[in-house]
Image 1 (cartoon, helix red, strand yellow):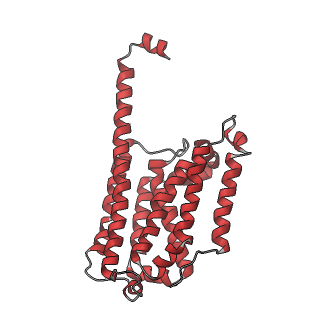
Image 2 (tube, rainbow, N blue to C red):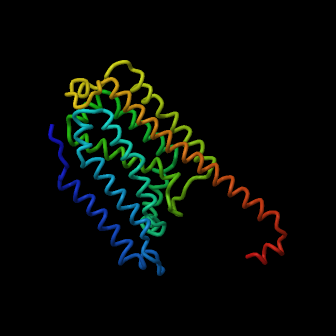
Image 3 (tube, rainbow, N blue to C red):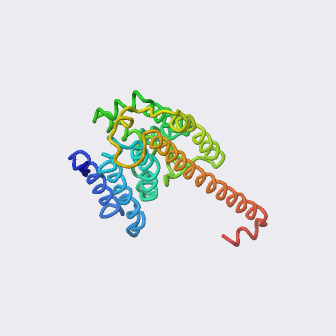
Length: 273
């Protein structure tokens, strides 16, 4: 077996163009976009470019070949990188003023409000994710390069819409309220349980590609599938519990701040401003 890195023009151009546009927006055009003098967002730039690098590692490194031809667990690692880790780095890496500038046109803003609504984004992601892991759809995607690209693109794009209510920096299409975020993340955890159970407790290797693939490591197809299901659930639970804990903390902190402000007499409150 000879592993290789992908150098397809479409992949490289997409990543390089995204990085170049980000460099323009945060570099020579940032004063015009932000409408004020601000320093270069170095920390955010590191996060954004790390997201680009991680996206390439997910779909352009030998991990893609391992997941496409040999190991289901490798393919699941790809999916987790595209759904959770890459979008998170992009969220942290994009300055609020840049996000809001992109969302200024009213049609775009209205569209994003609809697409990122937890009821739409969460349900659509869960439904499409489940469909892609059905044996027929999964096998077709493995053997059709165009569908495989579409699969990975939907993982990333729908994962971004799903995470938007929790991680966005935008003030035009902002995070949802704390109660909505808590209910949504709980439902998202529940929504992935059927796929996890299907992969982990089926008792058989359900994808023929991996069942008949050469064994490149000492791992049989069924245990490879079980490990893939565990990877999926561990990452999902890790992100979900982190978001839950953060929401609870910020909600309690905001309530405490409101209580302190409410307890200050109006005259003294004016003096503290």
